Structure formats: structure tokens, C-alpha cells
Length: 307
Image 1 (cartoon, helix red, strand yellow):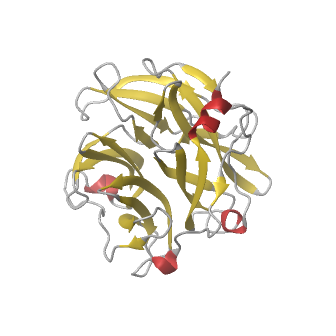
Image 2 (tube, rainbow, N blue to C red):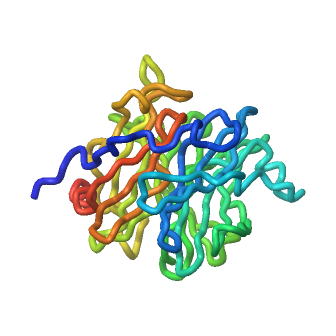
Image 3 (tube, rainbow, N blue to C red):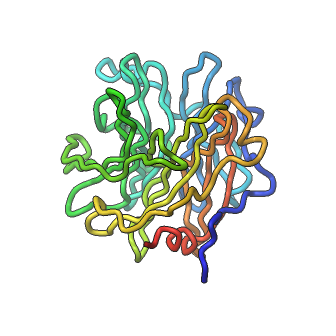
């Protein structure tokens, strides 16, 4: 069967969450992590307050389409004197990776020195424990693999482009989630739909053909930046090896709620849930102003990446 070039179909009632759904004053809501927990769908929302600082709040659903947002923020910038300076301006863009009964949360800590990826965990979505900062600034878009790679934890992250270089996707390893190293380059921006920078979106999805990795690419235009989504397959045993990459973007801003907002022309997924029938629910921030949902089939995404 021929793979669909545009494999996702938007939920007809998008957007699924806007700031009107948040039970306390805020500027906007976007870029939510996603998982299933105790029979419910959970979103971990990035909410920007009226100062322009971000925190993370939970929302729950029985069907994956209609969510109720909790009354209070769950993860706010820490007051721990050793880490406060790195989260002083907010915690942003979370991703959730389940390993056994533990749900690891990677997020971007933002402070005076710039963005820096961090990791913590929860077992019950009540208590949250910080573990470490994954790297030094400027870095972001860290996603954790759902199992160890050759005995080590592994993340895909995006050190920012310095000295005129463009941001690219790297892989970094850790024996204990505290000390990180052995970094290797995975994917660099190239001329085309994402030439300015690339970075990870959702945690990698394990398939028989390889690790499916959804990433974003940014293109600078006369009207501003456009954020779109690509896909690649990484080798299961050696994810430093790219098996194949979709030659075109597979999802991009089209609808008014994706074209117009605080940051126009952006689709930015941080959460994906694979159902038992291999339907992929993709939760994405639209124009940094709301959260929307699109669905596709895992086999279509994998087929697009095959060389």
C-alpha cells in the first residue's frame, strides 16, 4: 500500500484546549506532553502566565478528545537554591516517557543563561521529583527513549546553533540520568522545508522497523518562520544510525488556529499516544496559542521513512 504523504487527519473540533479552558488567568496554553495513566489520557500543558513565564498543568480525559484542566499548576519553577536560577523564567515544552511504572518528564528550564533541558519523574502524577539538568545552555527539545540503549539511558536533544551554526539533533547517553555524555550528531538542517534548524518533537516510538522519531524543522521566510513536522527511522540497536527519513514534511500549519496566534505558522507536537490499533494521537501546540489533535496510522508514518 502506498504511504500517505500527509498521514495525519485533524480532529474536527480542534482546537481541543484554549486559554478559555484554563481555570485561572493566563496568556495562552500550548505544547503539551501526553500519556495514558490508570485508564485515562493525560496531557501536561505548557501554560504561559500573564508575565510571560511558563509552568506545567495537568489535564485529564476519558476518551482522548475532551479534557478537564486541573485547578492549580502542577510543576512550577523550583525554589531550590542550586536550580532556581535555571528555571527562574519558566519550565517549558514537556515530554513524557514511561519506563515500567515510572513516568519520566523531560522539559526545558529557562533562566538568565538561556534554555537548558532537565529531567524528573513521577509515579502517580501527584509528586514530581527533579533528577538533573541534561546539558548546559543553550539546549532544548530533549526526549527520552522508552528503554535503555546498550545499558544506558538515551535522549535526543538539540544544542542551539552557536557561532552561526544551525541547531541540529544529537543523541546523548547516561548510566544514571545524572551524568550525561558520549554525544553524537544525528540530523542536521538541510536546504528545503526545514533549513534553519531541526529539533525533536515527541519521544521515539519503537516499531519493528526501527525507532520512529518525529521532529520539527524551521524555515525562515519573508513572512517569518514556519514550523513543520518531519519523520525519521533510527536503528533499534544503534539509534545513532538513521535508517531512513521522509523526504518531505508530513504535517504543517494550514488552518486558521495554526496560522494565527502569538507565534504564527506553527505546529509543534510534544505528545503522541499509540493506541492498540496503531492509531497515533498527536497532540500539538498551534501558533503557540492553543492545543490541537491530529490522528494517523503508525504504518503510514513508518512507510514514509523507508529508503
